[in-house]
Amino acid sequence: MKPHLVVALAYDQLCTFEFGCTVELFALNRPELGVEWYDFAVCAAEPGKLRAAGGITVEVPHGLDMLDQADTIIIPGWRDADETPPPALLGKIRLAHARGARICTICSGVFILAAAGILDGKTVTTHWRYAEKLLRRYPEIKVQANALYVDQGQIMTSAGSAAGLDMLLHLVRKDYGAKVANMVAQRLVVPPHREGGQAQFVPRPMPADEHARLAKLMDWVRSNPALPHNLASMAEKAAMSTRTLQRHFKDSTGMAPGEWLIRERVAIAKELLESPATSLPQIAELAGFGSEESLRRHFRRIVANSPGNYRKQFSVDAQTPA
Image (tube, rainbow, N blue to C red):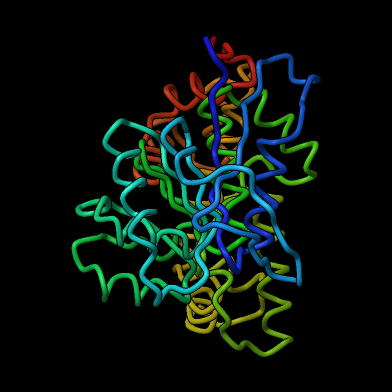
């Protein structure tokens, strides 16, 4: 079988960081992984040398016809959310989608797929700055504005620039399993999973002292997940009233303290599930759920998967796909 071909789209006024993330993930040789890595190519949305952010000029060897061969297409942003992409590009995207190619976008790249008309009825995400514009322009699309990335199977979309790395590592995890994805993340010196959503990055002013107290509380809870935390105990630990704590949690994370706590416990459970040595009752206790039934219920709600199926997919001992 021929290697899986990943094709990245380049265009004039290219988003350099997003493009660089794509090159770093898929273009480098990775013999230490012990698997047949992807083939990688770049195609240009328009002829001639292309300008990229930072005064860089990019000369691309392939035109849009390369998209016809791609198994996976990566669109690293788009130069202007208000600019309609070239008709030739939109046509190639429609053809690729029709034949089953996987298409992934970073940040504003989702506007290309929306303009191509292949997102109707689907759930997507983009940078929080663009979420309202995307929803207003394409009301038939469901925009999950707080997600770092959304996996719809054939189509994946990610939020702001760095969230592209989260999505691309997720893509590697789907293709090669958790062990390989973790090794790639280690080489990149980034976490294999980054929890939370965009709400934590939306600028919301908070007094420095109260911000420090909230951050300290969050770190303490993460270090002591098995304790029986509740709103009152967390407020006491942060030296705030319960009302103040609720307000600052909402401003900082977009969530109430209780929902943030559950999601942190789910994140801990996910890490523990990646090691087959820890049983589900032990995980429920260590993550602070109290019971296996509570773990299963919250895990299904947040991850849309069962703990058992998650372990089969992402355990470090999971068999690498052929």
